Length: 361
Image (cartoon, rainbow, N blue to C red):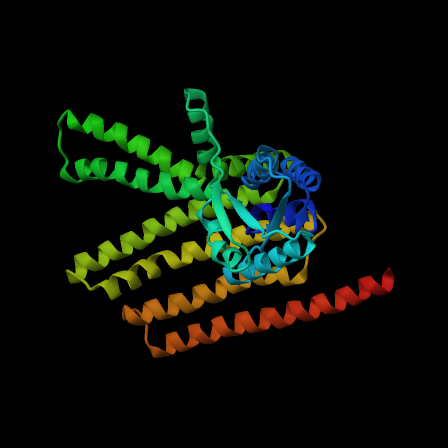
């Protein structure tokens, strides 16, 4: 007796259609193939099932049968064991006095890894690997490339390295400051590299999302739109202040180390950065209140910013020898008290006001 055995190692049939396996019989296999094709037309196991039906019809043995056995989606060992159990079930259903010979139908090398398991139960006359013929024209190539570019994993794997490679040459040109015709080629390849990086990282979607949020905030009258702009300006001023502080130290003391340079940048920028953080947090608190989603714990944000700023100011001033140990101790104490007291006060306020609101309701 000839048994056409279709193998679905990762159980796409069961997971996507709900068919209980093994499936035995021509009509049952054909029905399962149609169900899988309806659920996922791109699944290669669809072709395996139809090929099994085709081979069943092609052979003229008086006693022949077609069946589908599946494994599991996960461990290869568990999948192989499940296939072996289903093969045993199929063989037990076959009521024949003749020896059974099998033809195994798969869609690739992964499913063929289970062949030793099948061979231990039934002799195998042959293995039929189903390969789908694809159109090789330009249109098929275009849509294939388009699908690859739309896939986030493939896009990040292919486009980001290509973008980096294309950026190497323009960076070299800029580093050498060459006024040569090659600069034009460098600029063009640099722009192309930036485009590929933006596509690979999905930056264009982030920019579109940011523009949409800014537009909706402008028309909805959100305070954060204004406060974020002000905070950005304060951050720029703070950065300039940090650089100015560093330049003043270099002019007074000559070359300074990396540690003192970093501390000087922090000391010159911390006040402006703190102001930016306070402005941004106040805008967010105002918007949350206007949208009736206010929580008292949100008020901790500006106090936390001030506490961190106080600590950074004290530490940087101490390292730069602008102040002594007493100033550092005072700054650390003020920062700690601001954080702890604000947390306790607003936690108590939120607890009491929430109880009053629940009692009123």
